[in-house]
Image (tube, rainbow, N blue to C red; front, side):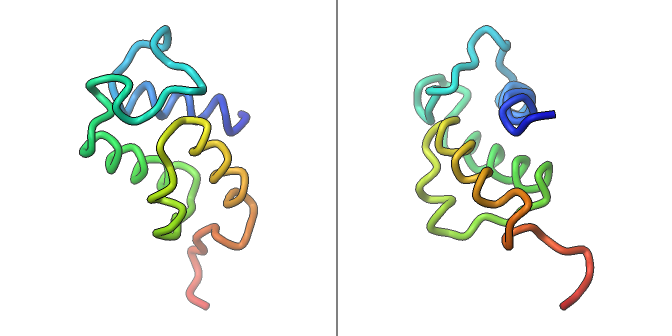
Length: 87
């Protein structure tokens, strides 16, 4: 499953919105469900689902689905993936 497809499912499920309301340019504040609490919950679910941990600067810069995709492309398969083993 592509990052975009997985993220679409996560956004819709986490924010409890119908897929018809989902857009790549959907941003925090565009819909009532994506308020500050919804934003924090969304970031936590995305981190867990993709097994990554966003750096603070990246988390602060995420304001839209497009931002999430861009940040995830940087993290997935990269050095930012969480390891289940202690280093």
